Image: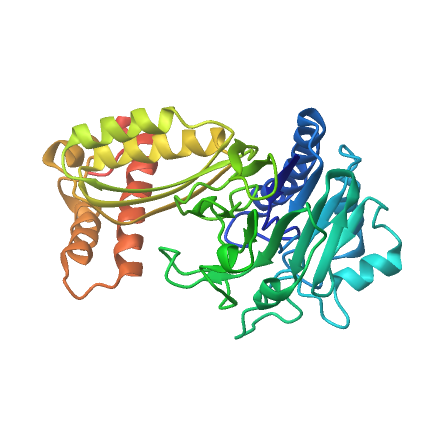
Length: 380
């Protein structure tokens, strides 16, 4: 029997450029933290090995410090690690892997498959057929040699590869590197451990994508897991248990506001967000000035609670009511003309998204400035 953890797509060194620098730093650090969590899970579950199916690093050009930190994060599990270069960290003649070798920071218990071949573990009578990517994009199936590769009699046959099974994945994948959807059968594999798809996915009984260990996109495809795989004997079907290890949960909400209760509902949902959440919020529709201000406050309160927040309110039309104008002291005079001009910009069918966003933001700023003034000092 063999028991191992299957993981992939760590993307160590990801920059997260769409976020503010402090948010990006926390998200990048979480990728190291979750690697340490995987090592702890491997030790606690007493597995025989950990398989990393490609894209350990996000870039060939990550710093030496990042390389050293990654291998340092593996210390919690002293058993074998088998790592496969993927499309982001392909085994080029000069690569992140050759730098790691020169730095001397790859521990003795870590096996990096820099060339196609078999890594055998006698202790658990298992042969790992490894198909590393030696360039970022290939058009040939790198797992083809699995079919004709012999392994010791009585050993488990486990494939390790990184790429796309055409006709299987329901969305676009990172690379075009093809893998036959029947490879597990044609190569007589007990299990085929795959990387490149960032969510964990069962292709068939013996073929699985592990997904990224730490979510990095606003896509609902079950990221943030490792797979705990047990093979009782050669030829027996694998037993696969997804284990959640990810620190952050990423959400993409697209909300349409039409009545005040829509904002009430959104406020309640935002109140449920915590420091383990990363949120992308897009709001469209129409709201009174008072309701738009309520939403703005809820968003800013949420920003203080969550790990990272991206908000797009540019398509929300802010339509002041008579009560809003009275509260602002904008029923007549210069201020009323400014409000009318901003309203006209919002209602103009030729206004571009940037103009609409600026008009809404200007109305909200105007409301905030006016409400900070004593009532007797407001424009009339």
